[in-house]
Image (cartoon, rainbow, N blue to C red; front, top):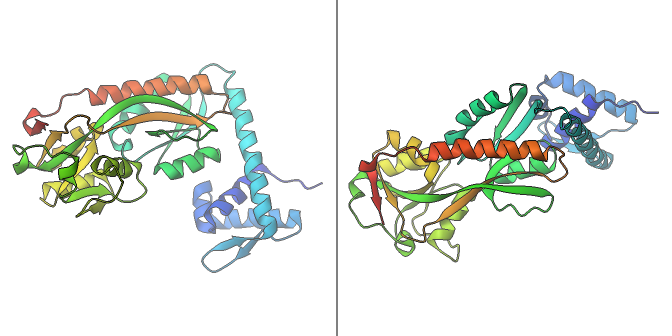
Length: 310
């Protein structure tokens, strides 16, 4: 009988995902030598190599690939058993590992963490900011419990709960405040600043500007909404940002806010989790807390001197 430990399975799962001892060790919050020792012990127990070790990256052997798939299934089943036990003990406790997209996190996360701390005193929050694709992959692999993303996700194994809808607003240089608000066709002729590929918000903005989803002319890219707003303030172009970001982002840049003509572009923010997770009722409560937190932030007044409407 082979006596494998859960620690060895977790370490190997991280190594299989990262294909790198250093990054896997960081993910597991251990030193690289400690992780390497556990992998060697695991291979000794199995009686065959699981990885091919290279100077910069490792590759899984055929056995390693099959073993990684089974290890992931075991770890997910164990996590679901833990969640089942948690669901029968009243208030949510232990760890809550949740993801949140970069176009939401800077504007809501700190207030949400405080709200969660007040409601669930025994809960250890483990937030992770990442793009939607990464969050959904981690959610499906049980490395996250839930995620705050733009809907729809349309993944059958995930439950989606819409929380709120928000408009996109147009930011222009401050001197453009009195000019007519451009329609989608006019935006195609302007220097439009958008997030780099991989952000769902980028795709939504492009869809508004052009129903055929072709890239607008004079497109420029940035890595964050803050970068885009600073570029607008420098007179480089215009950008679309979500409503919740306006209050924070306009503080340090000379920009004007324009509300786009109807039908204005919008996005739906929601919370998703695996349908198999037994903590559904607790997650619904968390979703309501996030909704209330975000609603309070979005309803706060914005400096009207920077605002115009279409």
